[in-house]
Image (cartoon, rainbow, N blue to C red; front, side, top):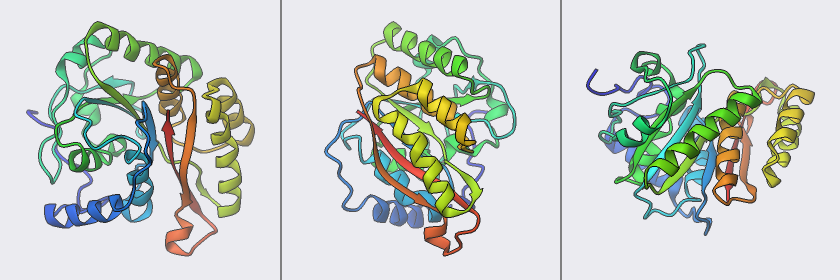
Length: 262
């Protein structure tokens, strides 16, 4: 493959470039947090459900940013942790990979495993639209244990030290899956509260204690750890919604949170 094709365009988000730009312009409209976040947590569901929340997360990074986004997404199909070294296609054009940063990581390159995973792809139109000069480092995370999160954060920090880059970190994650709205909201906000002080050990404890079915708790933890090492002190919840607030069906919802690590 010379580039990674879009696999969920036309399903999770519009395939037509004009339509996609209109959608993204609407989502970003009047969203300005005043932050310059070192990292964010953004959802990766279909845009009709989570697009507004994702735009809120990206709005915590100034539009002028033109560096490298390190995007950590969970593996939904059981693949091992790996990265990608080829450009990624979007309906708005190619997003280039920071090959030097990828080379500095001690992480296996596996283009085939990335082919159908949506957790990173869904982030890219938000980046291409708002940060057209930025590059990416796609990191798909397999094992999501606390040790794995710490190891991945360490590898990212080592790469940051090896090369000079302006880096922002993105954790791609939805929160609770297919439970009643009130339970999802209670469990998710309880877990997210631990991120206020970037206490990853407490975050894992709460995830396990409540059985929170967030799919990207490992990526969230890696971003929190790496951003904290780079000077961040707080995880600020900017917005939380569930799919029920869109569909009107509250029995089986998915939770979405926008978090700025500042």
